[in-house]
Length: 255
Image 1: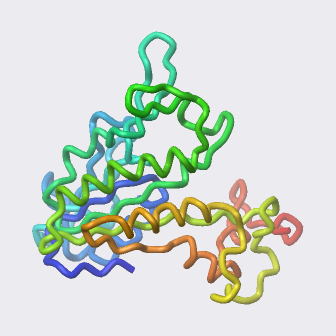
Image 2: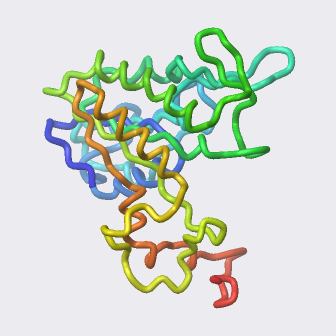
């Protein structure tokens, strides 16, 4: 739950699609407070980022104007991902913030999210190389790269955010509930116990890296531990209730 402590006329969301879905859902909570007329109440995608088109939740349109602007910037890494000319290799610049960072200043509420795309492997991963201080490499563990990429974000927040007028939130990534990591939610009948700790390997290390980064920052950042909140209710995970090809899963498919 995001509860701002400052008057909110301008909210900024920076992250990936999962965050967008959450924020669209939250949009229903303040739908009566914003509208879409070209200025208040819109989602904006940085023109330098991939062309995902306008991301405007229908809940935000045709409402009374309370002068509230909501901006969403697609930035799953929060650092710059560029395609190299010639061989079109994709390079993730660990010490350069996403191009959308030039739009971040001035918001009353900032919500950041990154992590999930850092866990992709093989053909699923979005990068070919990492670059840090002019050095190009393939040989770096994603968790190490993620840790290095958090630093320019933390420096930016410390230097550019006035905590008296801006609330900053960072929410962690949702855990994966799979048979492979022994976290499949089929036949789970009770919530997760706080005494059990994190049962799965993914994405424990990345959650810890985020927590350590926050402790070193001067600016107050409110941490939304979505990973742990999701683990509390594995029994309610939607994976066993979803549809495939328009049909609900059979009992056998849920296993």
